[in-house]
Amino acid sequence: MLKGDVSLAYISRLMNRKYSTGPMFKKVLQSIWHQINSAEEVFVVGTILDDKTVKGGTGWGAEFSKLCNKSLTCL
Image (tube, rainbow, N blue to C red; front, side, top):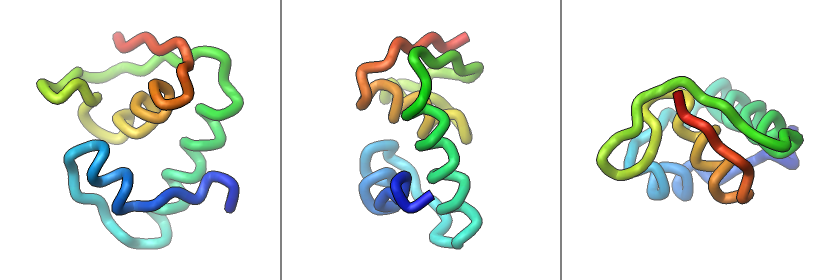
């Protein structure tokens, strides 16, 4: 999981949101990192906000997909 260890400050700035600093939340982000990193394309269900991020927990997965130049579809 350490490979997917990401800076909460970086993600907060990128997503224009404040996130929990708890260890469980960090593990969730690491898990999402591994799922997206190994995917060829990503499909998410969510609402696209005015700042072009996806609302809710799906947001980081969608944003990381864009950073990795993965094919991303938001339904």
